Length: 177
Image (cartoon, rainbow, N blue to C red; front, side):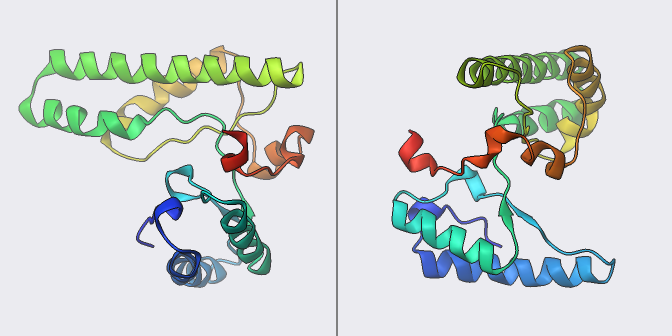
């Protein structure tokens, strides 16, 4: 997949691109007795019109996939370049600064989205945190996961999270704002 932005790409081109990736991933998973079940829209963009939203959902349904919504996104990828530069430069002070900012950003995002969900649903709702694998994540995830555990979070399968009634609504983000 070319990680196309669905809001800037027509539906035919978008689906053609993700279908090519799905076929490759399915072959890989099939050899291991598994199959592709979930899809995350690149940049979390699900289309800028209701028609595009419905067309993408129809494609996902035809191919046996389900949209995996992200409820906590904090653009953690933006810390990758400063982290790599600090590591390459051997700058411990800068590494510490970037690590601190990374954690502060994630902590704020987690608390904000947990609070928003609690206000909307009147209870804690399972969250889906989007993390990008990279050097900064490899260095900081142990600490992040310990913090999440200290905040009362636990890890669960996508099936378990999506079974929560809060995920029964599959509204297009174009309508939600």
